[in-house]
Image 1 (cartoon, helix red, strand yellow):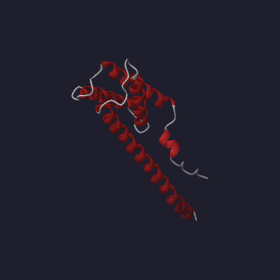
Image 2 (spheres, rainbow, N blue to C red):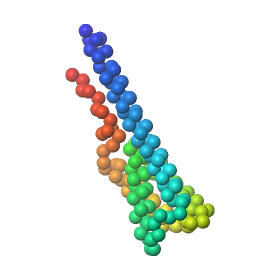
Image 3 (cartoon, rainbow, N blue to C red):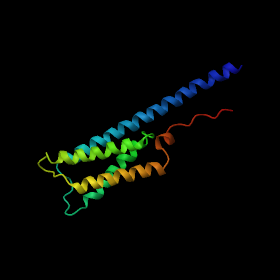
Length: 141
């Protein structure tokens, strides 16, 4: 009889694992779309033509969201993730020097780095979102 009860739980558990994997895949795909959006928006002609340093808030917010998003997947050794995102921002700033409509800016890179640190802090303080969206396994009775 115990074997039959175990068999009834197994397909349910497999469905929960499949749902959690699907959420992780979707989360990762959306993260890569965020990286692509950062590249496209940073290397195409500017959408906002502001004088001064108003675009720094956009840089800070964009990189905070990017870091927070990826930190939901990478939960161990997030410092490597943070370093990778900072280097991505620095590389994009350098690539802007090769475009006719953009100029590299040290303050943009600094705003990117502050955004990465903000996203890292938010990921440490808030619960892991993909696990909240995944169905929780049924309790053992």
